[in-house]
Image 1 (cartoon, rainbow, N blue to C red):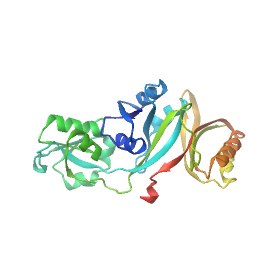
Image 2: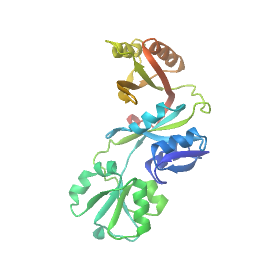
Image 3: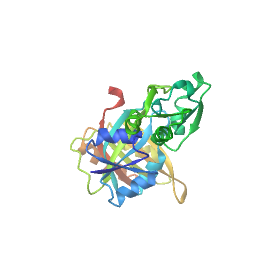
Image 4: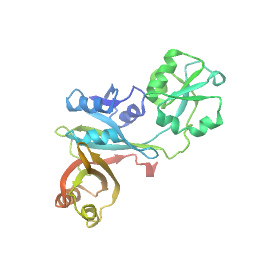
Length: 276
């Protein structure tokens, strides 16, 4: 099975895919659009995408592109993000002067850099790409921040583990497939939906009341501007559900008060952060 991810081999998306689809063969893609294009054109069977970090917020590139395709969420993984400082084999901490990583990873390790003022943080396009560059260049003044999977992938040596500022950094990853190839989840616990409201007073309240009336817990809601339609917004929502029957009923209710409703998926959450 071919599985597309954004970023290099050894990225956090790669690590997540090994948990969600251990048998998958990873196909790295440079950008979010390339991941979804590969899935939409059937060049891969599935994709694993990051959709939200507990500290940095939603990955809106994927949300915006996801709505335009006929994909469905099959499973969700909540994964603890641990940032590790790594170097090429044989390099020692005393010689390191620059640390490469994705800007988000660097921002989540501010305490480490404050404790090491001799180190300069340099932005790189990808955490795993930074690790690969450091190991291939073998420069003694370079280090990278990335996942343990990146260390295994490129043979890097880990100097310090878990250098992130806060332990509660988790990322939600979705396993997605084309709509016609995704197996139906018999006992889903979560529903993701996108909807557009009519432009009238109380429209959002009516939409939210469809969930409240059925005692369904709304775990997330976020609005996004619609391309080509100034001052109109798409709402994305996640809802805890006890099963398929309740999901069907909630969607039917939502369609009575919204101009557009698109189900993104109903699925189970693997390894939820609340139980880690």
